[in-house]
Amino acid sequence: MKITSRQNCPIRRATSVLSDQWSFLIIREFFLEGKRRRFQDLQSELGLSPNTLSNRLKRLEQQGVIERQIYSDHPPRAEYVLTSKGNALAPIMNALYDWGTEYPDTNGEDRNG
Image (cartoon, rainbow, N blue to C red; front, side, top):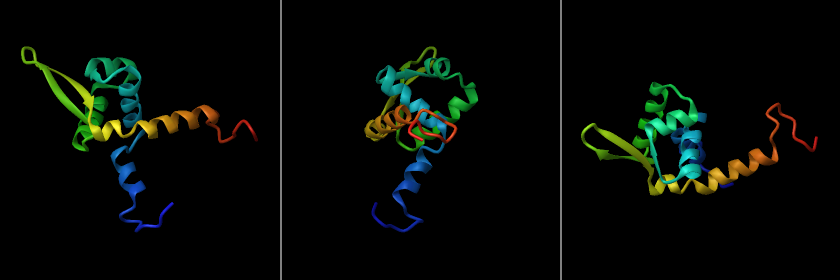
């Protein structure tokens, strides 16, 4: 790993965008279920409260990871899609998946120890 200023560290910047578990799980849904996701579908799959999901989606949209697209004016309805910045997370999501498969024990013990 390259040495950089701790204040301008790329890992720090990346984790500020994806600041919590829910953000990762929301992004996961785009890779598992397809390119376009509606609020109701995400809520149903994740079991999040509407407020929590709305806040996370707004944050991801502000960070440029997802984009909100209106598909109906009456009543107003939108769906979310990953941007190119969001699609660039694919290797990270795959690496997290692989790591979670390799080390499934959440109690701090790996299967080799």
